Length: 578
Image (tube, rainbow, N blue to C red):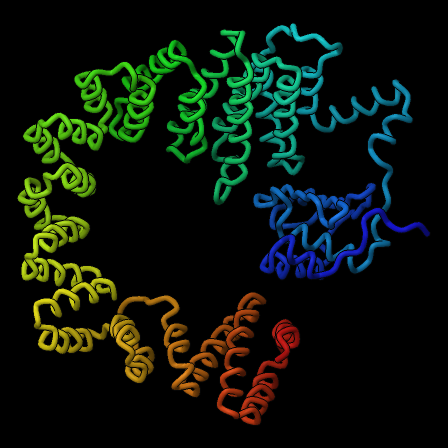
């Protein structure tokens, strides 16, 4: 039998491609048999993988002369093919390559079919996936560039159908890519006007069905909207002779910018303003500025502040070369761009006006303005306002800023008072270190430290005390305090104590690793077992460091017996060499 075009792979190569975490998860998918209909087509493996959603994911892996070349999966994180589903596909190939049904290359298959057969096949495809019909509209029948403008509503409906059908288990993102492919086809034949229409229509449909499209982290929608933005960017950068096509691309980009703001500013259009500012000429910038100004003036609702500021910001950029100071300040006031407003006022030497504007700022805005006043050398003029706010605000950043002002002027006693306030608010090691440093500079640390430690012990702030003991090298005290029930949650603290104790207190460190490993096992779950094995491995190394191998052997025998019914745990222990 001839050798497979896709050669054998090993677990190391698979792990290198997808990453160790995805490799371990992919192993579970492989063992459950979640790879469906595995096929081999030339140098490419193809399959479906049953994931967390009802509809299986489509995936493929292509092999090149130097190993795995490319891969892809339709799961939310499968772009580039570095996911657990691809790992499962490769492990399936490694385990049983003969289970893969060999398929003829697509080009070869199509070339040997007659015209009637191809027409019938295309009709079947369109009937099964109506969104495919968009490709027929966008594909020219002859090589000419004079295409009439397509109907944007037609493409919006096709994208809408693709979105809705995806939630019936019949395609989804894949079908949207088909519609977007129409825009790509127009772009390939330099029909920028129609390409822009398609990209804008698809983006509009996605925003109209935002709740359906937006998944847990928005990764799928981000990728699709970015594809529309990139396509429109090509239309704008490539087209230098057709003013109407350029305006269409600009309008489509601005529409995506507007839609993103309307739906809360999720960052789908982060590159839009850069594309417009870089590639639009002066006349085009004035046109876009008009759109931005109209949109800003229409955003008058109580919760439209973010939208007004976003429109104001792009308006300042678009008109940067033509605005005088008064016009600049007017836009800032109208849009609520307080930072830019105060910065320009201070640049113009209008300090009193800047102070008035700062007085109207909210607490978080005032904190930002404090930095601006400081950069202009007027920080001290703002201090009285900050002192007033500290009395009522929960924003401790204002206290920190005022402390830094005193410290810079050498007013250490005043700075220490504020540092203690911050320590009371934050209850963390960094604030403690700040108080310690100022107290040492004032020569009063020996009196201050016992008072602080006694106060926190009484309040059962053992988490903070543990961090302090670690920071000051008091390992025995850290080992004692980390076991005390504490107010507040200090993630990973036991690990920091164990690591710090490993060299001088290996037995105590080993006990911490044992306790944490047993807690993970009691919580159950493959991933917890894997983490438990990591801790047990460190515990074993500590026993070897103490030359107590027999005690370790006895412990592991008892541990395995205690959890002998947990097959997944036993499997992980075997893999970890425990």
